[in-house]
Amino acid sequence: MKKFLPLILSLLFIIMFCPQPVQAANVYWQIDLRDDGSIYESLTLDQPLNLDTQEWKQIEGGKEYKLERKLDSWQAYQALSQSLPIKAEVKNYVVFQRTSLFLEKESAGFLQEVAALNEGQLRIRIPGAIGENSADEVKDMTASWELKRLVVMEDGHKLLTATILDGFMLAVVLFGMGFLIIIIWFISRMKRVNDLIQERYSLENIGQEENLDEDDD
Image 1 (cartoon, rainbow, N blue to C red):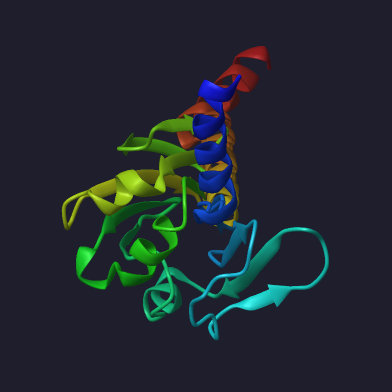
Image 2: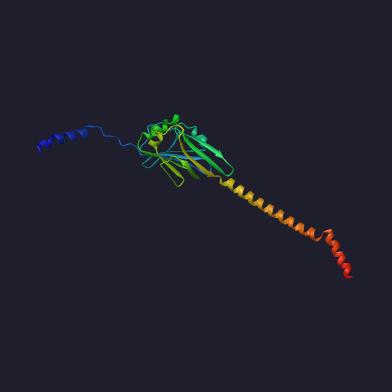
């Protein structure tokens, strides 16, 4: 037992006096694009951030530290400094919209600071069909990336391209097409009726009927 005493004392010394690593926060970063084009963003951690969060609203209560905010559009989002460093390219068509998101490393300071906390995940939800993407996983209109993987991506890297239907414009187009079909059918029907009337009461037919009447006399 005596020969193990120095080893035991050494272990106790290490446990008591050596600083233990502080458990870092798990990060959950969520960006939701709403049907009306607005954006809801939330950042959830196990402990408060030692960062300037004046552009966020802190949610009180609960064990987790949570920040959130709402923006009107991608343009408003890109004007923020404490945000995901992305560039949004939005192309509007008649009944749908195509949105592409690209990573901009020049303004990646906030992303790097958040990713340095610990393992974390970014989720972007799009109310449409997600096509070309670089996500780790795409499920239920949501694309997910590991934060540390985003940090090492090249500038201009495409995160995703999504196609979003415009429900209002689609309804307008369908209504217009239906109305046009009814008008075309009605005009065609009226033309047919007019042709029948002209055929029945044309001068030639009237003359033939008068000749038939004279023969009967």
